[in-house]
Image (cartoon, rainbow, N blue to C red; front, side):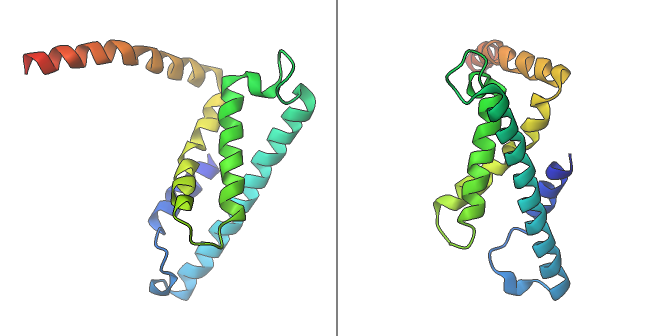
Length: 139
């Protein structure tokens, strides 16, 4: 939850031009960058512990056999890429940074009730598409 709050705060300080910020804002941005590193380290350690305990991908119940673990792996992988290339101004890094918005989905993977809700939402998309087609034809 704190990681999601941090992402919301990051969207406020979203300029690449740091000269527009005051010194207090720059200190705050540096603290947010350190928090980002801490969260990424925690997520990486969690992933590493799961990989060591379950195996990576070859066994039947291994880490990458679960859909939610695949999502966690993708989020951690792109977060590591973002952190390692943060000093460079490359175009594709903006897309990688945008993938950080998937972090709140990690919370869902640890809550069975939220998983059921997401599954129901995804299952209803097909029916909603049919309704959308009917509404479009009527319009």
